Image 1 (tube, rainbow, N blue to C red):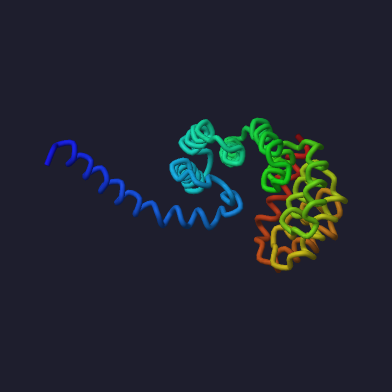
Image 2 (cartoon, rainbow, N blue to C red):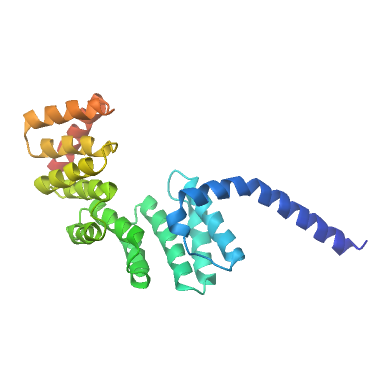
Length: 236
């Protein structure tokens, strides 16, 4: 048996062992990111695996992951199909958000939306990013998102959160209450409503909202600290 054949056999065995170890993690990440992966990388297993490695790195990180970003960037260069490049751009944007580079992330979401105008994931992430940096433009993007998916409680909740950030308290209250109506099990709106009423300087409603949020599993001390933090941010 030649030396190169032995090397080849060792390499094949090593890859098989590696793939077996990766497979359970890949399968879990695939289930959790079905929306992102749907219709992507058809007929290109090499590119799909490269993208999956990037996605796994991102999902297993608590914040920005340089390896995930670089792998997604390289996969985008390899991708011939627009939908595959769009998936790579989305993953790059996710990482940029984690790094705090919201403007760059928003540019990538716009790139995705140019290719896939009906991509609600990109539209939602763009709207949220605009809200985080307190851009009034988030209203227009969220309104488009709500128009397309009026019964999505999470979209309503995040719209309310964005409106809170830009001090549109009455509108935030409306969206958060709609989120509660659409999904009785969604707990986030209860905590956000505390900040809405605190921002309105309505102490009675604030206390009632705190009691309601605590009844839905929130921690009272954390809610009161959030009010203090909110007040400090407003003063700035």
